[in-house]
Length: 119
Image (cartoon, rainbow, N blue to C red; front, top):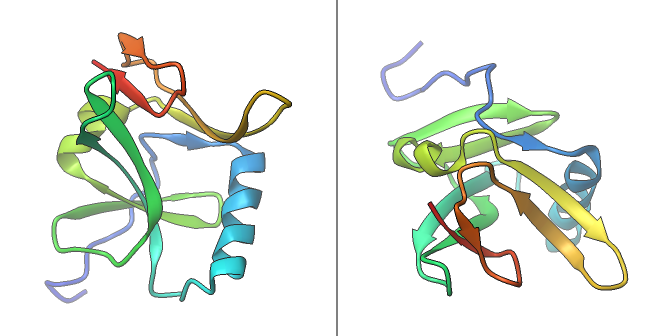
């Protein structure tokens, strides 16, 4: 294995439900996302509760940790695991809410829309 190739771990710090994995697969096809892009999960400062979730397709970077969830290769910065370990990403299809939802056991507060939290 060359020095610039990092192994993919088999233990994932997060869970992604089957319905969310199906939606991600559909989005990948609809958007024409290439095989060189993977799912990035992370956090950034902002939102009404202090942190916002990041979820999107991205190219791998040198300092990424990688792991597999179902058929999806997931990228995450090591420092983000502190806020996301044990989190579950789901796809909601209810009348009041449609989209990705984040069930994060590390969140001490969440906003009404569910896209930001504090820890």
